[in-house]
Structures are given as C-alpha cells and as structure tokens.
Image 1: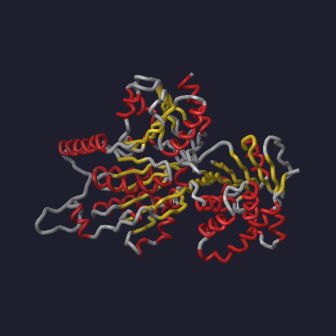
Image 2: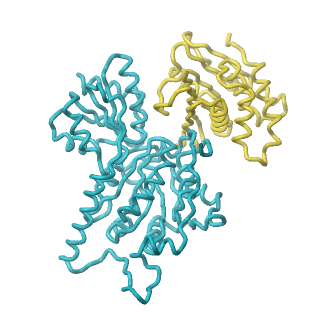
Image 3: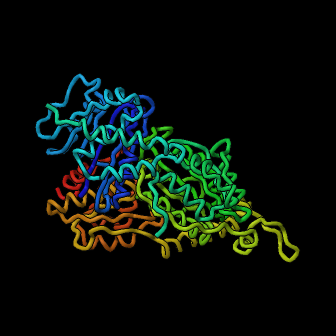
Length: 181
Length: 359
C-alpha cells in the first residue's frame, strides 16, 4: 500500500506541520514515510505545499506528479493541484475563500469547513488538525491514536499541554467532513 | 537497532557529524542547507563532546578555519550550497594540495551564479573534476536518502583519513529539505589529543624534540618537487578508483536498457523503473554512490549486455560525459534531465526512455 498526498495552502495555515504530524503518524504505524516541502520563493509569502508519502514498502521517488489525495486549503492551490489527483483519487478542500469549486467528476471530492469550525471552537490554531481529522476519516490509513502519538513526537515537550485541544480538533474534523454535493 | 527519528537530510548530516566524532564544524548559512548550522547551534555539541561549532563571517573564512583545524590533525566539516561551495573551492584546492582531511557537504541548488534555491545537480563537474585549481580530486559521495545523509558521514570520515584528502558529500535541495525516517548510529567519541597525535604524525601538534617540524603547505616553488607531489596525489586518486568505488544496481540482471543516475535523481528513476517494468520494458538502474571515483568499470561491463544507456541528472548534461567515457562509445548513450532547479518527474523520465533509448 502506498498513499501519495499533496497538502497545499497559504503559508501560516500549518500545511508543513500537518504533513509532519501525518508523516510521524505513519512512522508510529511502522510505515515508510517521506515529507518533501516546497521551500522555494512560494514559502516566502504565498502558497506552501508538502508532498507526504506513506507506504508499507520502500519509497522510491519522493517527488511525484500525481497524487492519491490532494488536501487543498486555498484557491491558488486548488487551481494548481485539482488536475494532479489520480482518477479515482480523493480531493479534500476547505470551501472558505473558494470562488471556483472543484469540477472533476472522476475523483471523490470532500469538503470540510475547518476555518469556520476552528473559529467556532475559539481556536484558529487547530485549523490544520481539523483538516487532518477529516483526512483520516475518509482515508483511515493511520489511526487517531497514532496521530496523537505523531503529535507528541513532532511537538517540542514545552508544547505538550496543547495536545488535548489538538486531539479535539482531529475528532471534530472526523465529524464534520462531508461528501461535496 | 539505533534510535529512529524523522529528520531532514540537513539535520541528519548535522546529527551524524556530532555522532561520528567530527572535531569541528565551520559554516555560513545559505538556502537550502541552513538547517545544518541551525541544528548544530541548537544541539550545542561543544557542551557535550567538545566539538566546535562556529558560524564564520563568510564561506571563505569557514573553509580556511577548516584548513587550520585539519592542519592540526582534527577532522573538520563544513557545508554550503552551490554559490557558497564555489567560494570554498580555493580552500578545498589548498587542502587537497596540503593533503588534509575534510568533510564538505554541498546541498546543491540551481545555477550558474546565484541561480535559484531549488534542487539541482549541475555542480557535478565542479565536484568530480576538481572544482578548484590544480591537479586534484575529491572523493565524492552522492546520498539519495536522508538515511544516507547520516550514514555517509561515517564513510566520509574513513575516506578523509585513509586518503588524507577532502571528501565531498554531493547532495541537493531534495535530499537536504526532505524528511524521512532515519536510524541513527551510536555516537563514537571524539579522539583525544593523544589519539590525534598518534593517528596524524604529520599534523602541527607542537614540535617534539625527537622529530623534524611538520609543515602544512600546498606551496613548493621547485617545479620538479611539485611534479612529484602531484604524481603522488594521482596515485592516491588511482587507488580510490581501485579500492573504493561504490554503486548500487537495481533490476540490472535482465536489463536491456539502463538508466545511470545518482542522488535524488536516482530516487526518481527508481519509480521510472517500476513504471517501465509494468509496461514490460526491461529497464534497469545503476546508481552511482561515488561519483568520483565513478563506477566506470561496471558500466563498461554492462555495455556488453544493454542496448543503450540514459544518464538522468538534474543538469544540462554533465555526468553523461563520464558514462560515455566509461563505455568508450560502444553503445548509444543519451542524456535526459531538467535543470535550473526544475525536478524531472518519473513519467517524464519514462517518456525520455521511450523517445531516446528505445525509439
């Protein structure tokens, strides 16, 4: 089993850290993982993206041009990556700020109102964990328990008191993700 | 089993330097390798192992600090990315001339000039053909995973002392910035001063009454003596070719066509092999682990078996020249690769295999 994922959005949305937590969750599940960020001019103001690969086998190329799953958090990323999802693949997006919605009919499209939900919960910082929760609901490749372990591994000890609210975000995301109508 | 961590290639190199017992790191930040010095500064090895970590005022200063440390028998490391490596080349040439150990990491980016900050393999000529002035070579390792960014520090350490010569780890922005699972080796203590003196009787460790003074220099104004010195260096590089060529073969046993690649490009090509095999194309991969010395002998043997070779590198075509020399133009050899910081995809490589190699 190999899952190739692109996560893309604005810098500051927690795109890279979401990818890192997902990669650590994979390690907790004894999988091979790779995490390849965009580190170029785009992360210096603008869009940020990261390719995460989770696999039960040795990972060949960390660079791929089509993905099993795209997690899209802004319009420029949707424009750029909608067509890179493999036929039959999955696209998850937060409709907040999206004016041109995805149109493909050969992939599974889910929407998750994570920006709105994070605001409702009074904690905009758990936005990315809500999205991650949505992802593991539709693609249960890693378990919630291993995501929490991944969080513990990727957060420095001094931030470990934030784990309960992040867990809450993951669980909320699992509840609110829905098939796009 | 050693400790498992999820790390960037740059961080793995930094941690490996501490664990390998490297004596000093002198560097200067540049994207995409700044995590090396960031990691070392945060890890503070000077408080535990006594390893010196210092951010110099420039690349030129940092390589000359390495020159000084190595002259005293210590093992220094430095790192930079392409434009910064160019600045270090004078010092590297001096260290090769003075026969000193050094580990230097290049996390290469697009060039020439300042180029851009995206991954590239267009520093191959610089790394393998000398780079600085004069008749010299570096022993050059090309890691293709974060694990190898860690493990190759140990090989680099061994080779730097075996040959008393600078060793380069030639990486790029993909391997430097990517995070993968790494199994860290157990720490090796740094040598004591007594051990340094024993291992490096040539070093400037203070003149003892019973021996002549040691002089570290790359200068000899007597051209005949200088010629003898250069020939001695050449013997060393020949020995590298005889004793320490490293490569990996993937699905070459029944291959009719062969890709030759190194570093991150070799990772991308592994996926191309899978795609090609799924279509019934008998494609294999030779991954050069050392790009100097180059696995020429093995490529020459494979030329008896395959119909053609494709050198796939993120450059406008540099390693392809070594592949052609290896097979003496007995079979067709082509080049494919994106350059200037663009990374080719596995499917682009497969298209090139079909268009150039199979036709």
